[in-house]
Length: 369
Image 1 (cartoon, rainbow, N blue to C red):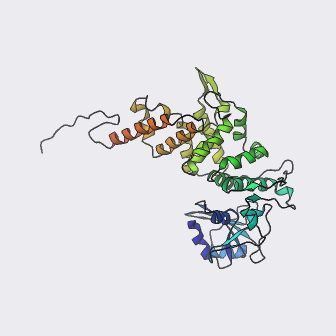
Image 2: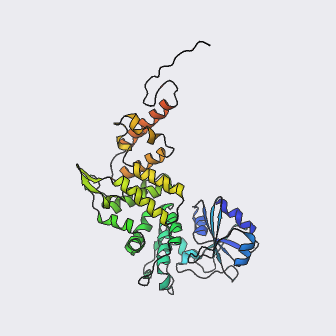
Image 3: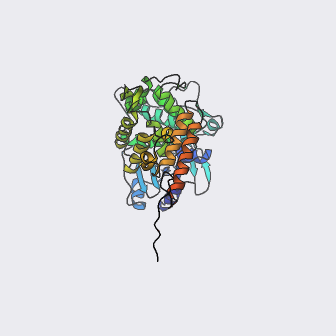
């Protein structure tokens, strides 16, 4: 179970895993570094138990505790074991981690068993963006489908989701088993156009059908997630933005999207900064996006031109990005395997004190002791 659960023991009031954390437990998935908890305790109880707790101003969240293992978001309610109903029924499941049992105050178990995501008829329009975001996460993370007749509410004109809630949303989407389902819903409902224009414009950029039969830049980006071997957040963010520079690039010397990697690195950095991601995550994503065009060429380039990139601890993640990228185009993995072979040879030479990074023998002078 998530390491963050141990921090809840400092709270004397009843506390339960809720919403996505309860569902992660039910379905056997998980999000390291993030926990959602509902408690019968008050804000005063939370402040007494956690002196460093903050009140982030996120819709539907009362407090946030940042720890060395991640963040815990708290929801306070008054009725024992019965928090207010959610717009989407699946989010009403609770998990009593202390007694290791689920609590189902609104009888949503059969909805989960049937794989149906249902919208309550009294869902409020002013919660529209949050309800759409929650539905996107549910479709991405769990084997659920939107029930027939469940039409998501249309948010009031001129409203938007607060930026502080957008980082948890995108993290939950990108660490899900099927991000494509959630991002597709967000695009279809206008969420992406309203909140993430950097991504929305990808849908208007066509690819050459010869090299990208899977579709345009947006469709290609979503396709890459299906080939991940890990749900690593940095890798997934890099996949999301690896082609984000294409709408702003211009053709040059036969290259249709010249310089798009460098442009995309800047777009990714600005986006992640706006959503409050750490400098380390931003730096790692910048590196991966900027260098994502290198792996197919490392077998042809002189080692001195690629050594600084292959020396990075992020290079294995860059190779994984490359594998997902070419797999989404339905091309074979030959280029990926060739890049891996060059990288293994580089590591072997680099660890050999008698050879240079490109494998050449080094002259060693023998000094008489």
